[in-house]
Length: 202
Image (cartoon, rainbow, N blue to C red; front, side, top):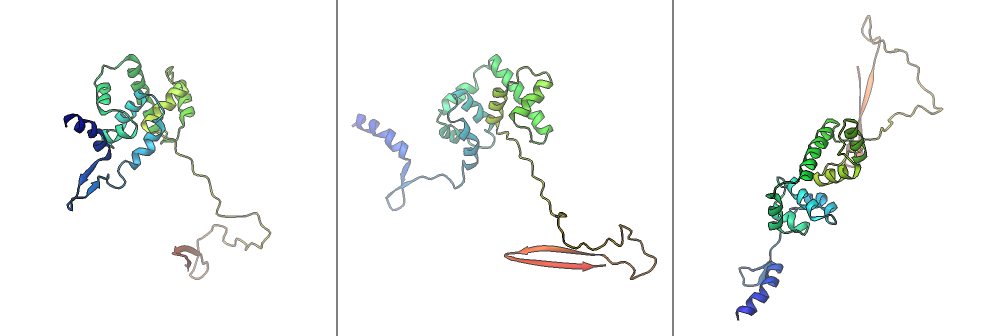
């Protein structure tokens, strides 16, 4: 009997079932949305080495539960804590130093530099450890992604053959008496599917 119970135990644990109030088995579900933010960060390290996965978990431990992250990147929780309390090697210390420098430059440039641009700046500052692949790996682990610059959108098209009203004021808004110079403006508001136009003059 004991051997049968022990052989069935892993299957029961994997299914994560429990008995409901009416006696029927029910599956335990995670709260909606839990881990969704981490999946975007952790998805890029699923094919990486175990050390990279551990480093990514450590970088995000203040935002997500450690146990959940270990399950999502397929590493053991005990292995992570064993790695965490293990004395750091010289390479680990160098990676931590480089991560601090990357974070400094990333904040200084308001989150815009990509890994090639980050590598060039660090090398210009004399950081010989900053190879492109190493910088890219550290940025990926910490979730530091370059922000795309917003493209300029022109709102005025001056290249047309339509008649243009003459500029009578020529930016001179001073007047000696009332009712000599009038200016106006319009505002557009989108109300659902309708476009409302408001105009005023002074």
